[in-house]
Image (cartoon, rainbow, N blue to C red; front, top):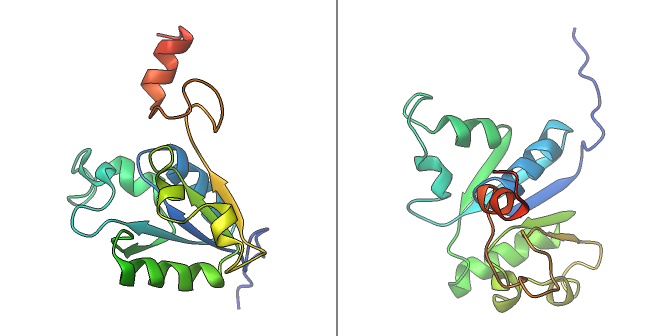
Length: 153
């Protein structure tokens, strides 16, 4: 009989509204450490990273690598029933990670201030390229853009 090692985040549930790289990589690390990660994707196309290539049995190699060990749930969180399903899921979650467009989560009522009434123990992690304050807070950001602006390219 083989005994599995206990990982540091066993028993932790993370719900993630994620796409591209920043949040998916963050939650991949959490999954590797034992967290149950539930990736919420838009119905139909899902995360646009699914279409980067078709190298892994018809799926994107990037998507497969960065989303390993995760569960996936398709919800159009702009629709009332789907948003309610997400809120029910968040009632029992430990962490919400999101990297939606700046301000999108707050506009949908998914800010920490709004969610703490449903689950006061919920940790909310908002990932953005430029942070919540400053002149660029409302701009979308991607790795190559940030590298270019920083003079790395």
